[in-house]
Image (cartoon, rainbow, N blue to C red):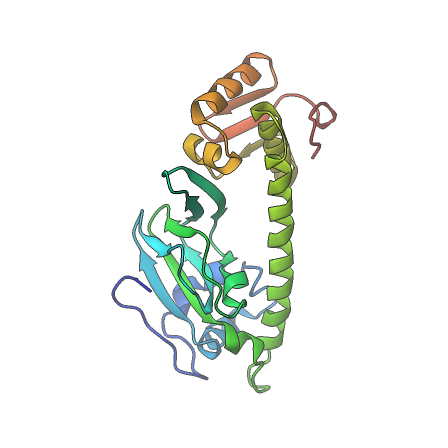
Length: 247
């Protein structure tokens, strides 16, 4: 596993010396939901956490690798992407601060990764020992079991997101894909105005469409009074009932 210099591991039963830097992010994550922030550093030690830093464009994971840890993004943003033999790229998802990833392959017992994970910007990733998560330790680590429960719910939520993406991709036209995706994002944000986590090329790769054709369709939708947009900021101008996917 390639990483940046200065990667530290934690001694068991002791608080990670570097943990305090990431507590404001970690206490808001689904994995550590309900855990006293004073205990997070101890838990990171219990899970033998180590951190690695990556620069923009650097690969965190490569297709064909095996991974035996659950990864958590403590800073920055990442893309899960896949290139075919001819260099055509598809984006599976974007990983934001506080999200976990690679857990399905870590738990598979040796299955290789089918995609790459690359840093969109300078990023810090925490590697958590999967076996330590499942092997709940002594009562001194009283929040360990809660983390295990949180992991289950986080994985369930990610699976729902993948099912939702299949809904976008199953639409036949570029417009239908855009409407389904934008309607879903508006529903998540609770209103018609929102920002998406992709630039134009990334959005095209995420929806598996041609960028130029998608840009033309967005302009037509704007001219027809369906949407307004500026860069990655969108506003839907019609009610949810008028969108094919619903919120």
